[in-house]
Length: 308
Image (cartoon, rainbow, N blue to C red; front, side, top):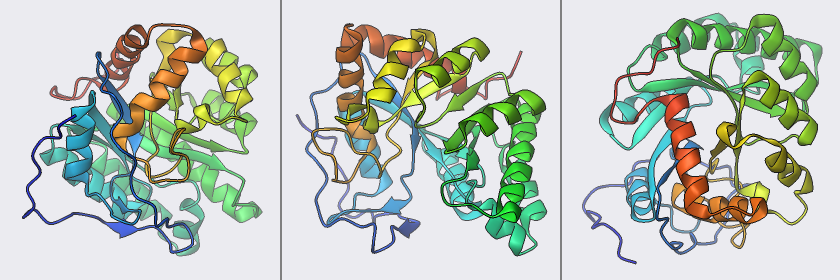
């Protein structure tokens, strides 16, 4: 497979590196066989330099295009990455943006007395034409255990829900060790018309709740892991009309390359594993997921989709 020509004079663009404890010295995996029917990666972090030979986002997108991944949603987790995501999406036709304060960042802003100002800037960024989602936001009780920290998460989450609704764009949920609390909050505040559980981490029961409410389930590379029985049971339970696929790159690299850097061009591995588990044709599943993705975020070349 031949990659599109990459300009060697174009300098790599990264916003940050992963922490030394998280970095890997392994190289990126080879390109997979291209998909016949293209799809989108609806959640990725291309601002992060990773691996022994980091690949900047221009080349990441070139590689993705070469294997049938036609576009990505570049996701912010704080003000810096949200600004970067919005700015790059404004220039790059293969990229849309999501902007938000990650739930683990909300207590940091709150402690510094800057949460309200940060939320106001997220609200401003959310109005940009190629920002099509507010995310990733939600609740994460794995790392935030204090009452004050959780209060900040709730406050931030509720504000993000309202920002998504005010702008008529999607909401991308980060949900870790907080399934019940996320659902309760969405129902109490009122979920946006298009709500996505990014990197779905629940089981068949949570998948059923999502289906009842019309919430989308986005599966990442961990659905391919040997011990991820709960995710595959959820995949079986979810209606095909609510399925999405993502990388959460550079994290959660699908099998058979688990432990190496992840990238949007590796989506075909996850999609093929999903199709195999569901006993369906890869191209049929790709067509369904591509349609679902455009219903959530609009077309990559169009103006923002508006809630009805």
